[in-house]
Length: 291
Image 1 (cartoon, one colour):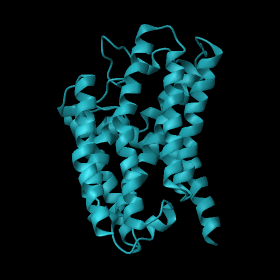
Image 2 (cartoon, helix red, strand yellow):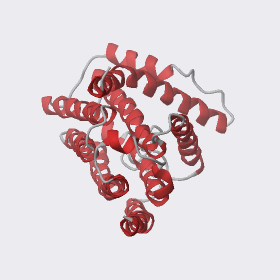
Image 3 (spheres, rainbow, N blue to C red):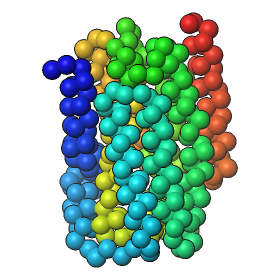
């Protein structure tokens, strides 16, 4: 099979298997968090039971626009992953990921619920916090590999991580924001906050809430693909290193989630931009110097 055929195959595998993998990872995350808290925890497949039950419930929408924008969130999230796993342009991947976030914000803003609107405002703040670092990631890969093409980035003669440790640290920082985990679970949390309830998904119910959960599963697999990208190079065994790195990142994310308290939005913006400027910018300058 030629390169284009393989890329199409990878995209189809993502489309079909990402919900399965994302759901299992969500279940493992719950199980691991429970063990850290000395609890038994739910079964690993519990997220699938939850989603199936949501699909059985009556669909109650605040307005028709809400469903449209939520579908847009799911569509652009899937599309960004397809572009990524089809080894397209990394800038296009980041653009579609941003569009997914905007659709989610608009869907939440379409409701008059104060908790939903508060969650949407905080989601916008989180987008402002992590977008600069995402752009730095794309720029760094371009400076290192002289291309935005993901297929060429993965065929690099050496590990990208060796030249981009600062960018990797910055990406890990914003990954916690994208996973909506403590201390950055401002817009929404899987643990209900009294002043926020469920934030951006407060007004989602039934099948709409199930679609939101599925979109999050797609997002998790897609974001872990970025972690994998830092370690994937020409050596076939580098893929194993990438998978191990993804597992370590998931464990670290769950550990931080269970060991930290939620911070204020001012601290979120300040810390995210500080990490972007220090770790990201210094690494960018280094890459420009060695070109």
